[in-house]
Amino acid sequence: MAPLPRPRPRLLTAAALVLGASLALSACASSGDGGESTGAAKVSKKASTSRYQGTVLSKNFEKPDLVLNDTSGQPYDLRARTAGKSVLLFFGYTSCPDVCPTTMGDIGVAMSKLTAEQRAKLAVVFVSTDPERDTPQVLRTWLDSMGKDFVGMTGDLAKVKAAARPLGIAVEDPVVDAKGAVTSTHGAQVLAFLPTDDKAHLLYMAGSSIDVYKHDLELMADGVAV
Image: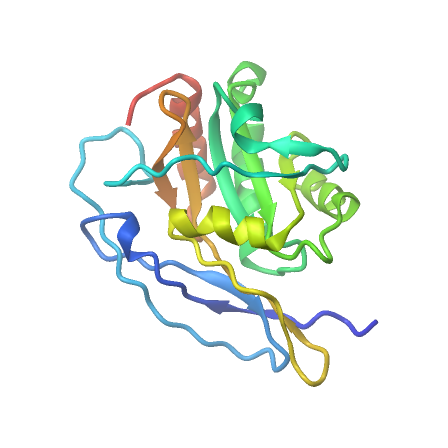
């Protein structure tokens, strides 16, 4: 099997997510030539007195009604299994060398700084956009390097795309070129759902710091309203 090509950054439109100052959404994709291509999606942040440091959404999205296999190979109902918890949701794939491991790694470090009681009130869920290669075993091994309590979901890509679309997160079918190089593109934003209504209230862009995640995860665990 040929080695996987290195992904390149790519920006996907999600302007409907927020209102206010301009921000950029990013994504990662595999590319045969290893070159880079960037663009910008204009989004904005509403003036807010919120204690949270993430972007406060003006529209609160429903938690996806999504059932896929978890890393033990068993069906995992996202809504049912995360009820009563604050949830960080991210769509990506394990072969991504930049945005995905950086984002999940930063969240993992932030989670490690919380108390066990705080962590029990939170769930971090990673949904694979490359289910052919991200088997439950592959996904578990990769996630364990970030956080052993992290949930991995993998399965029907059509279901993944359908779940991501209403959230303003673009997920594209993997593309294989003539040389066998695979391109897998996905939105790189993290959404935070709160247990009060199971809706997304906050968005974190690629590059959000460990300190930002730690600060906001503590507030979520303590039940602080946005």
